[in-house]
Length: 186
Image (cartoon, rainbow, N blue to C red):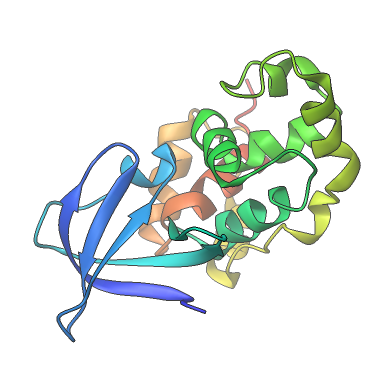
């Protein structure tokens, strides 16, 4: 299994990228839109957590910004009717936290709003029946939990909260998790 790929970003597209390792091997990874939005410039270093899906006719490597997204992707694959393309589509259309919330709350309209799910009730109901999303959830690192406790309930805006968490060393989906868990109060 290939658990992580890191080194130089040599090509990127909305749904895929290539990473050249120090050993001279280039890996092509399929990515959700959330990863594309956080990619550095070409030539810069990148680290992605990966999931390898082996089928009868192909091997496909999927890349994620965090272990949390990777685990969610792998959990989605356990639902009937959900293949890698649909799982990536779900993670591209909805943030990982929003997707988990939709599954937990059995929010079928939200799931059906995702391309490829559409009006197929068997797929959307299979997702929430099969998935116990609590096990996919990952705790935020200690520094972000500490920063979350320091945030006052009267924080004026998300940008200020995000900046505070960035200054404590946070990044990526953990920032979103911490900020969404502590919305500003008016």
